[in-house]
Amino acid sequence: MDYSIQKFLWTLLGLFIVLNWGFLMGSTMRRIGARLAGRVGVPIYQPWIDMIKMISLRTYLSHGVLYYIGPVFRLVGGIGMFLFMPVLVGSEIWSNYSFSGDLILLLYFQSFGMLGMALGASESGSPNATIGISRGLAQFAAVEVPMTLAVIAIAIQHHTFSFSEILDAQQGGFMNWTLFTNPLASIAGMLAMLGAMSHSPFNLVKAPNEIPIGPPTEYHSSFLSVLRTNSAIIHVVEAALFMNLFFGGADTWFMYIIKTFFVYFISVFIGMVFPRFKIEDSVRWFLKWPTVIGIIAVLVAAYWK
Amino acid sequence: MEEERKDKFLAPENEIRQVAAPDGSIIEVDPLEDYFTQERPKPYKVRKGPVENFLNWARAESLWVLGFGTGCGSIEIPPLVTPRYDMFRFGVQMRATPRQSNVFIISGYLSVKTLKRVIRTYEQMPSPKYVMGLGSCTINGGMYFDSYNTINRLDHYLPVDVYIAGCMPRPEALLAGFAKLKELIKEGKGHKANEYVENFDWYKDNQKKVINDWNMPDYNW
View (tube, chains in turn yellow, green):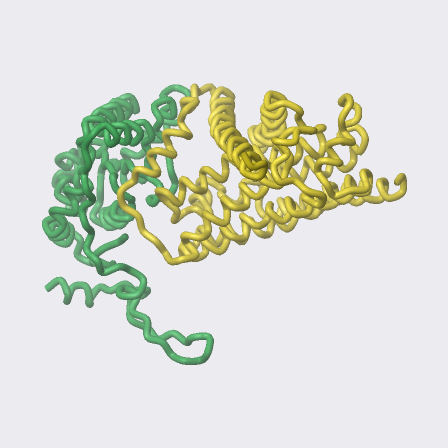
């Protein structure tokens, strides 16, 4: 078989695994949260049933062309992040379509889905969607600052914007992880991760029970199933992004699953403990400590290079 | 008659008005025509066979509830998410928006004023959708049977799948209601939304008989 087709099929298989792991991880986290509250929680297979249910609804309505395109853009953002990031370290077939400079593209894809969703959701005309979008964009602008500073610090440290090279530099024992070689950048990046995961206390965009459910308020049936698919993928891929940057990546699928689980669990754990911020507090928080630590990380990296 | 009533009680935001476009031209906006559909609802096709049975199973195991506190009965809904009753075990989850929910719990009493909102919300939900009447007030009026401002029989205004009797029914009764609803859906009897569409004129007649200030569009989807 042609190598490019083979590679494409492997990437699709990876996407399939990541999607299902995303669903499983989501329901597992919900069960953990339920146990914390003394409940049993949803069955472990609930996300799959919800997907089938949503697709099997019989009436649809549309608010226009952009309303259709919004969830598609969001899904492209999630899949794009998956495509251009190596899954396993040092593996040719599991390196997906990563290339030198993929780190910059990934940062772009992070915001791409959000902007697409903003277009689609505002087309729906629901005031709750508009509130969610304005909050989301304000918070994301604040989250981007410490995250970009952390990435710049790591890029200066390793002299590269390529994921594979950053991963290679972290191999050979956990003391080589960025977490230990560049702790300041790691702290800034992991604090930014809390915002990127948009879990409590930074779940201002969807803000359940406050602005009913934010941008997806008007989305239903298959539209919602596309959004659910994306959120399953993006939770894993975001966790993988931070795993690759700070925790030395994964060399087997088993390690991939373990590490993404724990990276995601950090944000869930903090979400269990802290209630939701207000938007002005959230923006101020991101522009205060994480940003200061990020600037120091860049300065230190520039000085020591 | 209905046309007159509609004109008489048209809500201010639904009146025809002049709006200036960005290029300076004046546009006339008729919200009822422009913002809402005038098309009557159509029934969806009810399929049969093993695939549909599987889909019915999925629909039954994933009930998304719209929590709509219409009366004192709604106080029995919050305990369902506590450790003691925990409805999440049964695949029942709360949703905040009608577009994403399938089950509409209408907890008695249901005043005429609230009935308007209930109808608007019900019509916004995607089919197949299910209605649960909670409490005696939705069955025959209960202790409010002779009130000037509440309706007595909910199924004159919306098709109801499951009634839960009691004043108040306990949360266990609600869980039993969910179990009964699941049974009905799995048997392929969960298509009351079609009934609403097929008898649309009858339902609208009944609704307009009690709602005097019908200041909303006739169809709300």
